[in-house]
Length: 325
Image (cartoon, rainbow, N blue to C red; front, top):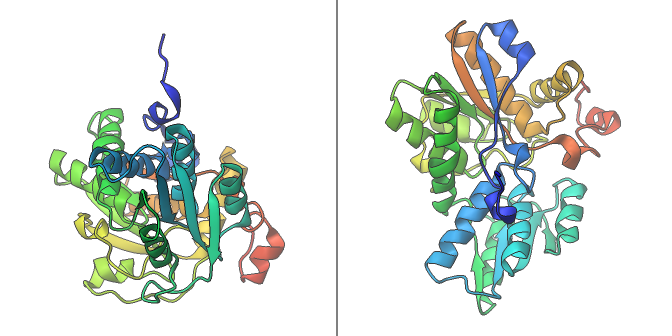
C-alpha cells in the first residue's frame, strides 16, 4: 500500500498538469505544477514546513512553542496547519488588503490573526516588522521571516525542483513564475541551472512591483500599480530573491491575469487564483517567444476559492477597472 503518514508527509510530490488549450495553441508543452494539491491548498505548504523544520532542528522552536509570521495568506495557512500537526501555537499578522476568506480560514484553523494596516516594508508598522517585534516579546516564540529565511529557498531546491526534473525526464526548457518571497524561483532556478544551465528561468511580475526592474535593469524601481494580486510582487530584494538565477523578466497586467483565470475556468474547468493567472500568462508568453516544440513549466499556486469575493465578483472587478474574462 502507498500511504502518506499524516499532514506533513502529504506535502509535495504534486503532479505536473498539461494546460491543453495553451499547449495546443503555442505548439509547446505548457505544464503547471499542481501546488494547489498540497494538503494546505497551496505552494506555500512546502516553505512553511521547511522553515518550521529548520527551526526545530536548530533548537529555536521547542515543543509547545509559538510560531509567529507576517503573511498575505497562504504561508500562514500552511503554518497554521503544521502548527496543529506539531502542537504549536500560531499567531499571524496580515495586511488588511487580503481576501477576507483567508482570515476566516486561518481563524478556523485556530490561528490568532492580527490584521494591520497595509504599509510599505520601510514603515515600522509593516506587518512583517510587527510580527518580528511581537515574537520577541514571547518566551519560546519563533518569527518565521519567510522573505529572508533561506529555508524557504531550500524547500524548493530539495523538493519542487527535483520533482519537476524527474517528471519532465529532464526535458524542461523554461521555468516561469512570479516573485513574492522569492523562495520558489530561487530554489527551482538553483537546482535546474545545476542540471542544465541552458534552462531559461523567467520572472512574470505583477504591476506595482519592483522585481521586473530588478531583473531587467538591475535597479529596484516600483512599476505602475498597485495590483489586485495577493502574495506576489515586492518592493525590495529579499535574501531568497537575491539567490535566484533569473535570465529575463516580463510584466503581466491585472487584466491579463484576470482574463487568463477566467479563460482557464471556462475552457478547461480550472479554478485558480490571480497569482496563477500571472504565472500562466508568463508561461504562454515564454512559449510564444521560444517557439513550438519547447517544454515550459510554471506553478499553479492555489485554487480560486480564497478569492471568490473579489476575483470572481464582477462588481468588485469593475470597481477596480477590470473586466471578468
